[in-house]
Length: 211
Image (cartoon, rainbow, N blue to C red; front, side):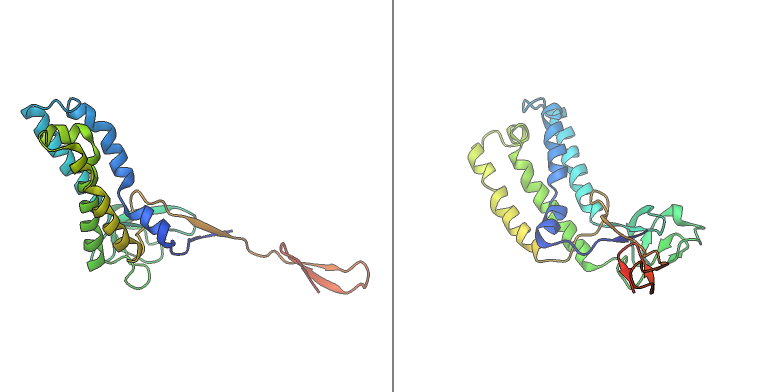
């Protein structure tokens, strides 16, 4: 049995992989604690601002990660660079085809840094930043004088536009946060046998008999 990466995801799957919905769910879970449930003072505002920055950074960083699967089914993650997929643990792994030093080059330029990676990273940060406006404790902390319905109306058009750009853009990388899906292919096992009726020698595979 061999493992191979799945085919390119469809538009809806690609959209789900690119939009930072998972990151936003984690963020919305910790915001009430960090902001003191919206009753912010100077310290809470500073910590909340740092938290927003860290989550936005991770949204961008994950766009520059990818992965590949070895013949034994091991998944290797790394950072895309101009040379290939970088992972310090690849150093000395001459048993893995496509490894050069600490880089996995694979075939073609799939694992090399592209302009589209910066494009996806920018859109991810924009999407996440707009989604933070749905967190009431955060908006109460930073925008106490702005009506809630005004702030919550911003993420809808922003993410609709970002979603359209993602849906018809390049497929998402299988980096951190995007699980690699494998397809399993069975190899045929051939065994000769005599057909019980005709006595003709046939080949029996694990798929079907062939005479």
